[in-house]
Image 1: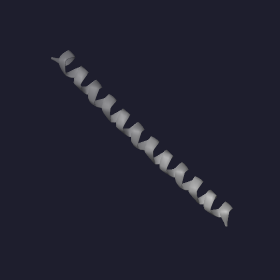
Image 2: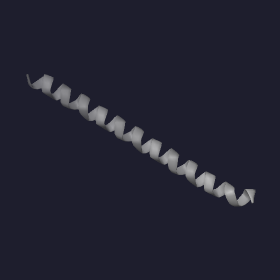
Image 3: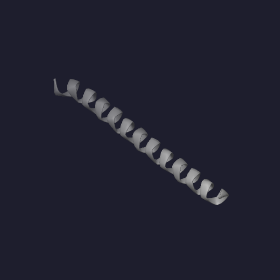
Image 4: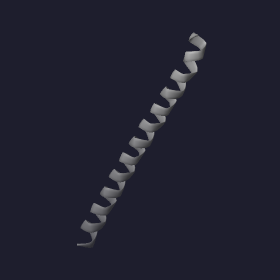
Length: 45
């Protein structure tokens, strides 16, 4: 019974880890784009 339950927990944990990583990646990308746009606007003026 334990061996049957274990793979499901591993799969859920892997999915949560991937989701967290993707959210963190999106946050970093949006932050980098925001900083880039601000620098570009400041440079133009």
